[in-house]
Length: 335
Ligand SMILES: *Cc1c(COP(=O)(O)O)cnc(C)c1O
Ligand code: SF4
Image: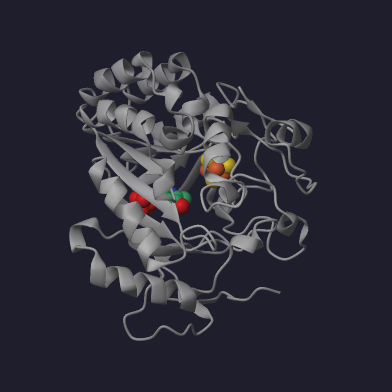
Protein backbone atom coordinates (compact mmCIF):
# COMPACT_ATOMS: atom_id res chain seq x y z
CA UNK A 1 0.00 0.00 0.00
CA UNK A 2 1.83 3.03 -1.27
CA UNK A 3 1.54 6.16 -3.38
CA UNK A 4 2.41 5.00 -6.87
CA UNK A 5 2.00 7.86 -9.31
CA UNK A 6 2.48 11.57 -9.71
CA UNK A 7 -1.32 11.96 -9.51
CA UNK A 8 -1.61 10.07 -6.25
CA UNK A 9 1.23 12.14 -4.82
CA UNK A 10 -0.39 15.45 -5.83
CA UNK A 11 -3.68 14.42 -4.27
CA UNK A 12 -2.14 13.17 -1.05
CA UNK A 13 0.08 16.21 -0.48
CA UNK A 14 -2.06 18.77 -2.31
CA UNK A 15 1.04 19.85 -4.21
CA UNK A 16 2.34 19.55 -7.78
CA UNK A 17 5.50 17.53 -8.29
CA UNK A 18 7.78 17.60 -11.34
CA UNK A 19 7.08 14.85 -13.87
CA UNK A 20 9.97 12.44 -14.39
CA UNK A 21 10.33 9.13 -16.21
CA UNK A 22 11.15 7.24 -13.02
CA UNK A 23 8.63 5.12 -11.11
CA UNK A 24 7.20 6.26 -7.81
CA UNK A 25 6.52 4.24 -4.70
CA UNK A 26 6.09 5.78 -1.27
CA UNK A 27 4.52 3.56 1.39
CA UNK A 28 1.85 5.33 3.47
CA UNK A 29 4.04 4.94 6.53
CA UNK A 30 6.59 7.25 4.87
CA UNK A 31 3.99 9.52 3.20
CA UNK A 32 2.45 10.26 6.60
CA UNK A 33 5.85 11.10 8.02
CA UNK A 34 6.52 13.45 5.12
CA UNK A 35 3.31 15.29 6.02
CA UNK A 36 4.84 15.97 9.41
CA UNK A 37 8.40 16.82 8.36
CA UNK A 38 7.38 18.91 5.32
CA UNK A 39 7.97 18.40 1.61
CA UNK A 40 11.36 20.14 1.67
CA UNK A 41 12.73 18.33 4.70
CA UNK A 42 15.98 16.39 4.54
CA UNK A 43 13.94 13.30 5.31
CA UNK A 44 11.39 13.86 2.53
CA UNK A 45 13.64 14.77 -0.38
CA UNK A 46 15.05 11.23 -0.38
CA UNK A 47 11.68 10.00 -1.64
CA UNK A 48 9.98 12.82 -3.58
CA UNK A 49 10.41 13.36 -7.34
CA UNK A 50 12.65 16.28 -8.22
CA UNK A 51 13.28 18.27 -11.41
CA UNK A 52 16.95 17.16 -11.12
CA UNK A 53 15.89 13.68 -12.27
CA UNK A 54 15.40 15.02 -15.76
CA UNK A 55 19.05 16.07 -16.03
CA UNK A 56 21.15 14.19 -18.60
CA UNK A 57 24.22 14.14 -16.32
CA UNK A 58 25.50 10.91 -14.84
CA UNK A 59 25.72 7.22 -15.74
CA UNK A 60 23.04 4.57 -16.35
CA UNK A 61 25.02 1.81 -14.62
CA UNK A 62 27.42 3.75 -12.37
CA UNK A 63 29.13 0.81 -10.67
CA UNK A 64 28.91 -1.84 -13.38
CA UNK A 65 28.64 -4.72 -10.95
CA UNK A 66 26.90 -6.97 -13.45
CA UNK A 67 30.29 -7.37 -15.10
CA UNK A 68 30.99 -10.09 -12.49
CA UNK A 69 27.71 -11.86 -12.91
CA UNK A 70 28.23 -15.57 -13.70
CA UNK A 71 24.48 -16.26 -13.50
CA UNK A 72 21.59 -13.84 -13.52
CA UNK A 73 20.95 -13.78 -9.77
CA UNK A 74 24.57 -13.64 -8.59
CA UNK A 75 27.41 -11.13 -8.58
CA UNK A 76 30.71 -12.72 -7.56
CA UNK A 77 33.31 -10.00 -7.07
CA UNK A 78 35.00 -11.03 -3.85
CA UNK A 79 36.20 -14.60 -3.39
CA UNK A 80 34.34 -15.59 -0.21
CA UNK A 81 31.01 -13.81 -0.73
CA UNK A 82 28.40 -13.16 -3.39
CA UNK A 83 25.53 -10.78 -3.88
CA UNK A 84 22.32 -12.70 -4.50
CA UNK A 85 19.42 -10.96 -6.26
CA UNK A 86 16.10 -12.70 -5.63
CA UNK A 87 14.13 -9.65 -6.81
CA UNK A 88 14.56 -6.25 -8.45
CA UNK A 89 11.56 -4.76 -6.70
CA UNK A 90 11.58 -2.42 -3.69
CA UNK A 91 8.59 -1.40 -1.56
CA UNK A 92 9.93 2.17 -1.60
CA UNK A 93 11.65 3.89 -4.48
CA UNK A 94 14.44 6.19 -3.27
CA UNK A 95 15.15 9.02 -5.67
CA UNK A 96 18.95 8.76 -5.21
CA UNK A 97 19.06 5.01 -5.93
CA UNK A 98 22.18 3.81 -7.77
CA UNK A 99 20.03 1.20 -9.51
CA UNK A 100 17.34 3.68 -10.48
CA UNK A 101 17.84 3.05 -14.19
CA UNK A 102 17.39 -0.72 -13.84
CA UNK A 103 14.98 -1.19 -10.91
CA UNK A 104 11.66 -2.88 -11.18
CA UNK A 105 12.19 -3.94 -14.79
CA UNK A 106 12.25 -7.65 -14.10
CA UNK A 107 9.65 -8.76 -11.61
CA UNK A 108 10.21 -11.35 -8.92
CA UNK A 109 13.09 -13.63 -9.95
CA UNK A 110 11.86 -16.37 -7.64
CA UNK A 111 12.82 -19.81 -8.91
CA UNK A 112 13.08 -18.65 -12.53
CA UNK A 113 16.87 -18.79 -12.42
CA UNK A 114 17.39 -20.33 -9.05
CA UNK A 115 18.67 -23.77 -10.05
CA UNK A 116 21.49 -22.11 -12.01
CA UNK A 117 22.37 -20.00 -8.99
CA UNK A 118 22.29 -23.03 -6.74
CA UNK A 119 24.57 -24.99 -9.08
CA UNK A 120 27.01 -22.10 -9.16
CA UNK A 121 27.18 -22.02 -5.37
CA UNK A 122 27.57 -25.79 -5.23
CA UNK A 123 30.49 -25.60 -7.66
CA UNK A 124 32.18 -22.76 -5.76
CA UNK A 125 32.87 -23.98 -2.23
CA UNK A 126 35.05 -20.91 -1.61
CA UNK A 127 31.81 -18.95 -1.22
CA UNK A 128 31.02 -18.64 2.49
CA UNK A 129 28.48 -15.85 2.54
CA UNK A 130 25.33 -15.09 0.60
CA UNK A 131 24.25 -11.48 0.64
CA UNK A 132 20.58 -11.03 -0.19
CA UNK A 133 20.34 -7.82 -2.20
CA UNK A 134 17.92 -6.48 -4.76
CA UNK A 135 15.63 -4.62 -5.06
CA UNK A 136 14.89 -5.18 -1.42
CA UNK A 137 15.01 -8.85 -0.41
CA UNK A 138 12.44 -8.28 2.33
CA UNK A 139 9.82 -7.53 -0.31
CA UNK A 140 9.70 -11.33 -0.65
CA UNK A 141 7.21 -13.29 1.40
CA UNK A 142 8.37 -15.28 4.42
CA UNK A 143 7.60 -18.46 2.44
CA UNK A 144 10.00 -17.50 -0.35
CA UNK A 145 12.72 -16.39 2.06
CA UNK A 146 12.31 -19.67 3.92
CA UNK A 147 12.60 -21.62 0.71
CA UNK A 148 15.90 -19.94 -0.20
CA UNK A 149 17.37 -20.30 3.28
CA UNK A 150 16.34 -23.93 3.46
CA UNK A 151 18.10 -24.61 0.15
CA UNK A 152 21.23 -22.65 1.12
CA UNK A 153 21.42 -24.50 4.42
CA UNK A 154 22.09 -27.68 2.39
CA UNK A 155 25.37 -26.20 1.16
CA UNK A 156 28.08 -26.97 3.71
CA UNK A 157 30.30 -24.12 2.51
CA UNK A 158 27.76 -21.39 3.35
CA UNK A 159 28.43 -20.02 6.82
CA UNK A 160 26.91 -16.58 6.73
CA UNK A 161 23.68 -15.09 5.45
CA UNK A 162 23.32 -11.36 5.09
CA UNK A 163 20.37 -9.15 4.12
CA UNK A 164 20.82 -5.64 2.77
CA UNK A 165 17.51 -3.91 3.31
CA UNK A 166 15.81 -0.53 3.53
CA UNK A 167 12.66 -2.05 5.05
CA UNK A 168 13.30 -1.43 8.79
CA UNK A 169 12.90 2.36 8.54
CA UNK A 170 10.60 2.54 5.51
CA UNK A 171 8.14 -0.36 5.89
CA UNK A 172 8.50 -1.55 9.49
CA UNK A 173 5.22 -3.50 9.31
CA UNK A 174 7.09 -5.97 7.07
CA UNK A 175 9.04 -7.11 10.11
CA UNK A 176 6.23 -9.37 11.23
CA UNK A 177 6.13 -12.32 13.60
CA UNK A 178 6.69 -14.74 10.72
CA UNK A 179 9.91 -13.01 9.73
CA UNK A 180 11.13 -12.91 13.31
CA UNK A 181 10.56 -16.64 13.81
CA UNK A 182 12.17 -17.43 10.46
CA UNK A 183 15.28 -15.45 11.44
CA UNK A 184 15.31 -17.13 14.81
CA UNK A 185 15.17 -20.57 13.24
CA UNK A 186 17.92 -19.96 10.70
CA UNK A 187 20.20 -18.11 13.12
CA UNK A 188 20.91 -21.47 14.73
CA UNK A 189 21.41 -23.20 11.38
CA UNK A 190 23.94 -20.77 9.88
CA UNK A 191 27.02 -19.52 11.75
CA UNK A 192 25.70 -16.00 11.59
CA UNK A 193 22.88 -13.95 10.13
CA UNK A 194 23.56 -10.29 9.54
CA UNK A 195 21.03 -7.60 8.66
CA UNK A 196 22.47 -4.45 7.13
CA UNK A 197 19.96 -1.67 7.67
CA UNK A 198 20.02 1.08 5.07
CA UNK A 199 19.20 4.46 6.65
CA UNK A 200 20.46 7.94 5.88
CA UNK A 201 18.86 10.35 8.32
CA UNK A 202 18.03 10.30 12.02
CA UNK A 203 14.45 11.38 11.26
CA UNK A 204 13.84 7.95 9.69
CA UNK A 205 13.72 6.56 13.22
CA UNK A 206 10.66 6.73 15.47
CA UNK A 207 8.92 4.60 18.10
CA UNK A 208 7.45 2.21 15.53
CA UNK A 209 10.81 1.64 13.84
CA UNK A 210 12.57 1.33 17.21
CA UNK A 211 10.18 -1.35 18.43
CA UNK A 212 10.85 -3.50 15.34
CA UNK A 213 14.59 -3.01 15.73
CA UNK A 214 14.30 -4.07 19.37
CA UNK A 215 12.70 -7.32 18.19
CA UNK A 216 15.51 -7.91 15.70
CA UNK A 217 18.26 -7.11 18.15
CA UNK A 218 16.79 -9.57 20.65
CA UNK A 219 17.63 -12.35 18.16
CA UNK A 220 21.02 -13.96 17.82
CA UNK A 221 21.86 -11.90 14.71
CA UNK A 222 24.02 -8.85 13.99
CA UNK A 223 22.60 -5.49 12.98
CA UNK A 224 24.85 -3.26 10.88
CA UNK A 225 24.12 -0.09 8.92
CA UNK A 226 24.84 1.32 5.54
CA UNK A 227 24.19 4.93 4.61
CA UNK A 228 24.72 6.97 1.50
CA UNK A 229 26.24 10.42 1.80
CA UNK A 230 23.68 12.63 0.04
CA UNK A 231 23.76 16.31 -0.75
CA UNK A 232 20.95 18.11 1.06
CA UNK A 233 20.13 15.08 3.23
CA UNK A 234 23.07 14.25 5.49
CA UNK A 235 26.00 16.22 4.08
CA UNK A 236 27.32 17.65 7.31
CA UNK A 237 29.27 16.25 10.23
CA UNK A 238 26.43 17.19 12.64
CA UNK A 239 23.78 15.42 10.58
CA UNK A 240 25.86 12.26 10.29
CA UNK A 241 26.77 12.31 13.96
CA UNK A 242 23.10 12.46 14.83
CA UNK A 243 22.35 9.56 12.44
CA UNK A 244 25.15 7.48 13.96
CA UNK A 245 23.98 8.19 17.51
CA UNK A 246 20.50 7.06 16.54
CA UNK A 247 21.84 3.87 14.96
CA UNK A 248 23.81 3.09 18.10
CA UNK A 249 20.75 3.72 20.32
CA UNK A 250 18.96 1.10 18.23
CA UNK A 251 21.71 -1.49 18.62
CA UNK A 252 22.92 -1.07 15.05
CA UNK A 253 26.68 -0.97 14.51
CA UNK A 254 27.63 1.61 11.86
CA UNK A 255 29.26 -0.22 8.98
CA UNK A 256 29.49 1.67 5.70
CA UNK A 257 29.09 5.26 4.60
CA UNK A 258 28.93 5.22 0.81
CA UNK A 259 30.08 8.09 -1.34
CA UNK A 260 27.21 8.62 -3.80
CA UNK A 261 27.57 7.10 -7.26
CA UNK A 262 27.25 9.30 -10.33
CA UNK A 263 23.79 8.04 -11.20
CA UNK A 264 21.83 9.46 -14.08
CA UNK A 265 18.67 10.99 -12.65
CA UNK A 266 20.18 11.38 -9.18
CA UNK A 267 22.99 13.85 -9.74
CA UNK A 268 21.17 16.46 -7.63
CA UNK A 269 22.29 14.38 -4.62
CA UNK A 270 25.93 14.21 -5.74
CA UNK A 271 28.82 15.84 -3.94
CA UNK A 272 32.53 15.70 -4.65
CA UNK A 273 34.99 13.39 -2.94
CA UNK A 274 36.76 16.43 -1.52
CA UNK A 275 33.52 17.58 0.15
CA UNK A 276 32.91 14.05 1.43
CA UNK A 277 36.40 13.75 2.89
CA UNK A 278 36.03 17.00 4.81
CA UNK A 279 32.72 15.88 6.31
CA UNK A 280 34.14 12.47 7.20
CA UNK A 281 37.25 13.82 8.84
CA UNK A 282 34.97 15.93 11.05
CA UNK A 283 33.24 12.69 12.06
CA UNK A 284 36.54 11.05 12.98
CA UNK A 285 36.92 13.77 15.56
CA UNK A 286 33.46 13.51 17.07
CA UNK A 287 32.59 9.79 16.86
CA UNK A 288 34.37 7.01 18.75
CA UNK A 289 36.19 4.49 16.60
CA UNK A 290 33.77 1.66 17.36
CA UNK A 291 30.86 3.68 15.97
CA UNK A 292 32.60 5.13 12.94
CA UNK A 293 31.41 3.71 9.60
CA UNK A 294 33.99 3.13 6.90
CA UNK A 295 33.71 5.71 4.14
CA UNK A 296 33.78 3.87 0.80
CA UNK A 297 33.30 4.49 -2.89
CA UNK A 298 32.52 2.07 -5.68
CA UNK A 299 34.98 2.17 -8.57
CA UNK A 300 33.03 2.04 -11.85
CA UNK A 301 33.00 -1.01 -14.13
CA UNK A 302 32.87 -3.57 -11.37
CA UNK A 303 36.26 -2.79 -9.83
CA UNK A 304 34.75 -2.86 -6.35
CA UNK A 305 34.55 -0.82 -3.18
CA UNK A 306 37.56 1.08 -1.92
CA UNK A 307 38.27 3.49 0.87
CA UNK A 308 37.17 7.01 -0.04
CA UNK A 309 39.03 8.70 2.79
CA UNK A 310 42.62 9.69 2.29
CA UNK A 311 44.52 10.63 5.43
CA UNK A 312 47.07 12.62 3.42
CA UNK A 313 44.86 14.96 1.47
CA UNK A 314 41.30 16.19 1.07
CA UNK A 315 41.79 16.98 -2.58
CA UNK A 316 41.13 14.24 -5.09
CA UNK A 317 43.62 13.17 -7.77
CA UNK A 318 41.02 11.84 -10.21
CA UNK A 319 42.09 8.21 -9.72
CA UNK A 320 41.15 5.38 -7.38
CA UNK A 321 43.28 2.28 -6.72
CA UNK A 322 41.54 -1.05 -7.39
CA UNK A 323 42.26 -4.25 -5.51
CA UNK A 324 45.13 -5.19 -7.81
CA UNK A 325 46.81 -1.85 -7.08
CA UNK A 326 46.00 -0.45 -10.51
CA UNK A 327 44.97 3.20 -10.80
CA UNK A 328 41.53 3.63 -12.35
CA UNK A 329 40.39 7.03 -13.61
CA UNK A 330 37.20 8.12 -11.89
CA UNK A 331 36.05 11.62 -12.61
CA UNK A 332 34.61 13.53 -9.73
CA UNK A 333 32.68 16.12 -11.65
CA UNK A 334 29.17 17.19 -12.32
CA UNK A 335 28.97 17.70 -16.06
C1 LIG B 1 29.69 -4.47 -1.36
C2 LIG B 1 29.73 -5.74 -2.01
C3 LIG B 1 29.84 -6.93 -1.28
C4 LIG B 1 29.92 -6.94 0.23
O1 LIG B 1 31.14 -6.44 0.65
P1 LIG B 1 31.45 -6.29 2.21
O2 LIG B 1 32.67 -5.43 2.23
O3 LIG B 1 31.64 -7.67 2.74
O4 LIG B 1 30.25 -5.62 2.81
C5 LIG B 1 29.90 -8.12 -1.96
N1 LIG B 1 29.83 -8.16 -3.31
C6 LIG B 1 29.72 -7.03 -4.04
C7 LIG B 1 29.65 -7.16 -5.51
C8 LIG B 1 29.65 -5.78 -3.41
O5 LIG B 1 29.53 -4.68 -4.16
S1 SF4 C 1 15.72 0.58 -1.23
FE1 SF4 C 1 17.79 0.57 -2.10
S2 SF4 C 1 17.60 -0.51 -4.07
FE2 SF4 C 1 15.51 0.11 -3.40
S3 SF4 C 1 15.12 2.11 -4.33
FE3 SF4 C 1 15.98 2.51 -2.30
S4 SF4 C 1 18.20 2.71 -2.65
FE4 SF4 C 1 17.32 1.70 -4.46
